[in-house]
Length: 364
Ligand code: G6P
Image (cartoon, rainbow, N blue to C red; front, side):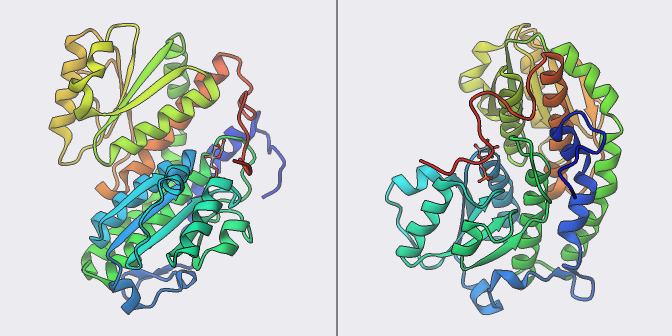
């Protein structure tokens, strides 16, 4: 990949469109069809060490932190290891207890973000085992970590991260599958996830084909002063990332909430001028999510749903292809990148270089 714009008007658009190839690249050479697992030799973890892990703690900033939140969900559900993610800066300033049975994972596109690097160094000083999930080969975090995996997204130029976010989440699915198959994930469950992973590139291409429709929706919602994003469990980090993307490049205020928390505060904000983007996958939480849409509709809120089928309570639905429940967040994030992109474009923003932001923050 070169730094050439390749016929696109912005790097962000180019990088969004590169996602089918990028995902293909992170999967390439890693899947083991014989044992229905994946090879990630760079993790430097033998099976006995992998079985000894009691917790996983993921650290990152911005979009990488959000990828880490989805990653924690994948590790918890596929490997059945308690896992969570935290902003690296928060972690390093709260004098954390460093536990030798916890696997720490630092996530960074650039591999140079100071807060993440400093967290890694603090962990290592205290005897923690740290892996890196990094895009830039040979970067500071990659060098400092005890092992890890590259996400192979290729060069990302736009300040906001799109293809690297997607690839990082796919890399976490690989790590979760790897740890799961060493622990208690069955052969058939391993197969189910591998088949799902292989469907991703074509499904991403299918979503990219609906760009025209998403552009129209973006233009319709671009007059909003503020937007709400909601999701539940696997959908919540998707909502967080979509709201961050919108803020970063369109400068529209946006908030993300777990759908279940609406009634504990944000419902007071709902009115026609505050549209809600709702993540509504066809999974075990579908009815709960639909109930949230009803609550919003009852207060005359406009709703744009991202779902696996039309949602009758929503004013508009972006229908995305279904994959395995665990992998759906990867696909549901893609149309929301395009939504943020076209909203910013219709407002005339400088998409590749949003005001006040830098691609990588290498100072405190
Ligand atoms: C900056 C960028 C974000 C990015 C974050 C973390 O704030 O503007 O887009 O998510 O840094 O960067 P990293 O390179 O560590 O993933």
